[in-house]
Length: 285
Length: 336
Image (tube, rainbow over all chains, first blue to last red; front, side, top):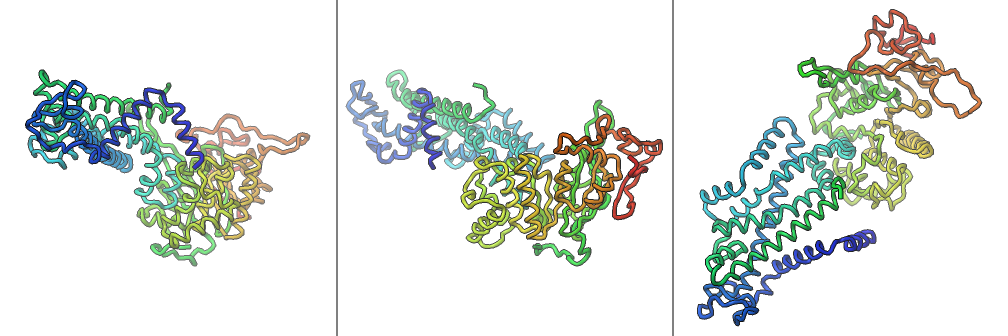
């Protein structure tokens, strides 16, 4: 325990200021998402047609901090709700991606031969195919529902995890501990789940932090073009899309969620890169 | 300890626990040219031996002679090209994975590099407990106690249970690896260079520990090493390997007293003597061992043998009993 405490102290000592700000921002966004029910000043779907299109309070409005939209809904409440939806969808999607990709990678590494060939061809195919086109196709054919949307997000980027996991499992198989545990009579499942996975998990975690902001971007992009989160539910992307129609007159409606998306994904990318550089000894600083 | 799945006839061949018959293991090597013939690396090229219950059978040879491959073949961790590995009369080479795993309760291995053989992300105690979890021995609550007991029997303290491999010393790591192998109460333990990664003082401790455990539990060891001093100290019988073949096999005392094969003689002559005034006759072999991809004609040792005759370069000598259970593969045994 003492050692862990020291490690945490050491960690905070060597964090550069920019990274620190980014981490604070990410934590704040996550806290907003977790406690959105308690901090929303108003119901995000309650309309108030008398007070429509009010400017933010710092621009002279009197209808809440970020004003209201064309139906008189409170923008701040909708923003908080959007952060919750976007982060939840992206987070679940990232977990699906990580699990799917890692399992595929381990299977390819374990069975080798034809199984490996087929799975890695699939990975190459996924790399070559733009994800947005695939997403548009699937959503156009099957229509939109939230579960399909999350699964679709889960497919984005799985091939990176698969390649990483395969490569690392291939080298871990030759490591002494894997041979030794196999020799004790362990089943392959046990070797992968209890020994190889913990040994390669930091690299998977880094890939997760790099994948997560991409998920937010994909979610907002699809919501922006109307294929993602559907009203009355709101997400950062659909808020932006909604605000787009008022860009000339009420520009803040699109810009406010845009800034949140920009800052959140930027912060996550910065932190992800930094974590990778600090965990991977092969990266020369 | 025997598993339920496999019924082993423990009475049949009761004196011999492991029989190796004409074991061959070749690896294919990429040819140097694009369309050239695929070549074969003859790692193990037709070996025979019997390991008796309760003895320590030593395999000695220089690096690259196929010792470690033999160890893996004996435990069936790799499949041989041909030949038989009989454990108490059970043919092991084509076992189904589940049966193979079940048999691990009977035979275990300890490795050269104890740090590599331990999972860096798991505590020592959990790793020693793992074989019990794998083979579902005892109820989970009792397993921890069993681990503590086995830790004590290899000379480790209780608190080591919660240590990680990088937090303990090399000798303790090898003790932990040994404990992990012993917790299943195997009959056969294959030791692949178990002490060559350790300091000399620690080597002695681990070797003595191995001897003690053998006395207590009646274990059978197959002991692989390049160090003749250790072999001499611990083994009952010794096989000398050269380029994938056994060139000489005898009781330990007999081998050192009446050395027959010139290669064994050279090996023994190379043992350092801790006495600076002692002038020993040294046998220096010319050249290096030939590549196991490209073996010489006749006796494999003939290009380096100081007493080779024409016959040696033409025909390969067979391993034959020269009396006193002393087997030699040489046309001119004992003449060097």
